[in-house]
Structures are given as C-alpha cells and as structure tokens.
Length: 217
Image 1: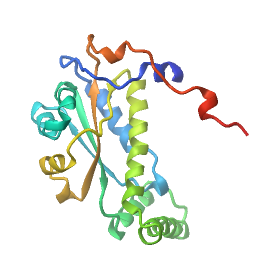
Image 2: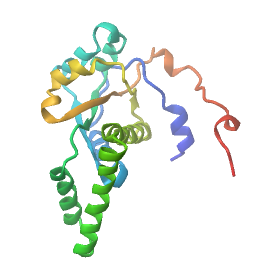
Image 3: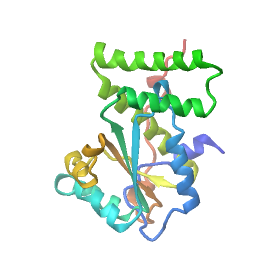
C-alpha cells in the first residue's frame, strides 16, 4: 500500500455513479473502521446511521433541501450514506458501560487497574464538563477524529467519499429521531464510486507547500 498514492487519489466526490454499489464485505470493513477508531481516553462518544436503501437515503436527503440543495444529489446517488453523530450526554452509566466492555475484552490485569482507568477517564470528562465547560465541543472533536479515519480508510479500499457539513441539522435530527436517542449529527458522508463525468475527479490536488505548514525543530 502506497499511502501517498492513496492520498493523492482521494478527493471530495461531487458526483457518484448511482449504478455502482459497495460490496457487503467492504461495508463490514467500513463498520469496523468506524468502530476501531481512536478517541480520547477511549471514550467512543459516537453513533453512526448507515443508509443503503432508497428510503433511508431519501430521509437523509431531506436535510439537504433548500439552501443545501447542492448536496442532495450526492446523498441520493451514493451507494451508502453515513451520518456521524456525537452523544449529547456522557453520564456515569455510559462510562461504566465502556469500562465493563474493556474488562470483558481483558484490558485489566486486576481490579486496581480497572478502577484507575475509570477514575482517569471520569476526571477527563469532569475537566471538560466542570472546568473548561466545553464537554460537547470535546465530544464532537472525537467524532471528527473518526471522520478523518473514515476518509483515509475508504480511500484505501478504493471507495470514494465526500464529507459534508452542508445540511440542516434540525431536519436531519427530526427525520432520524436523533434527539430522542441523545445524539447530535456532526457530518454526513456519502460513499460509493465516482461518476465518469465528475469534474472534481480530474482537477489537480492543491495543498500549501511544506515550508508553510511544517516547523522542524
């Protein structure tokens, strides 16, 4: 695998070939890609809605009407659409659930290590909740870590994608009943295969030069 080649081939797809579908095997890998993503203190404060049916994609596309109509075609024509959500409540029940899963997976040699992990994770949550008062912003950042992981991962599988913030979050929340589930939509990511006439596929990639973005000390 040539990482630079993958990154140069990856781009924000503007038009999908609606006749091409992602295989079930690749969807399984993408789900694992999302599940295995890193997060601060292994918080994993996310949930993903994956639409593959016309009905599911149409429900999501309602949030791209009106001002965001330029994104509607991407949603309905993609093979699958992923809605990345963050949790709006990080309570002790949620933290205990993570802890017990870690315990089941054999991460703790003894009870002392288990208690230490819970204490440390809770302290980080409380710092953002009580001191910095930016808990939701911090949680959202963890989802963006996953988003970056997703974009690179699907590119490695030869799958195209486009990350989108251009949607009406209120409409999307209503359509998917996210508020009732304690979730906040962060990004929509249509995935699939580029159309032959996607203008953005043939444009050269443009990034700032190394001397502008790196300081070597």
